[in-house]
Length: 285
Image (cartoon, rainbow, N blue to C red):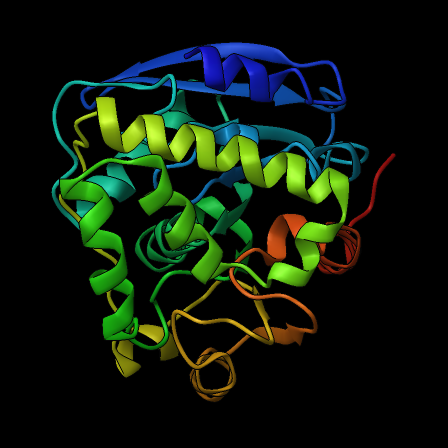
């Protein structure tokens, strides 16, 4: 929690903390942006927390009421009760958040594992999603490479910082770490991941999978996919090609000079692309 709070000090805009009860436990989130703006719910990556959005939130919250969620079962401030054990459970969990916030329909965005959760929700409850943004989603379109689990498992069984940092280095386009601000966010993510694997017992029993052709063809929600051109956990061009072939209302692109770190290391480019997609056709009083 000290590492979490240290990361949150870099949050650049005012926010309101919320804790929302459901049958799965108490979900923590923070809300920022104009109260009357369209809703945007954002979901972080695996074994991270909502604090990973610190470099994106100033842009995103200018024209949207952003709800940054600590994904249930991950080492943030959400407190699990009933474990999430299926894709359907994730749909129920996210629906409970929207119900508590009294939001009928929201824009939804996720990064990495959060991207897979967002895609799963867009397929499972399309009536609750306005538009869906996927940033370097873990799975969903094509399976993860076998190296992913081979590199991730050691740190889960032997939680040492050097193993976590080695895993994160593998995921990162390391030239981006020359920027002091990017390095700062990277170090905060590594801190929380290391302490998470060491002290937190995960309560999520759902691993990301590639969705079937039929599921993706049946997608009803406008979808936007961004992947780092140097993505390492799967072939980014192949993932983009399958999404473009199957998803009916789809836009997507590869972002140069980025791997799985894309959402924060290339945040200026990524934020601009996200907002252009979300604001297309949007009318505000």
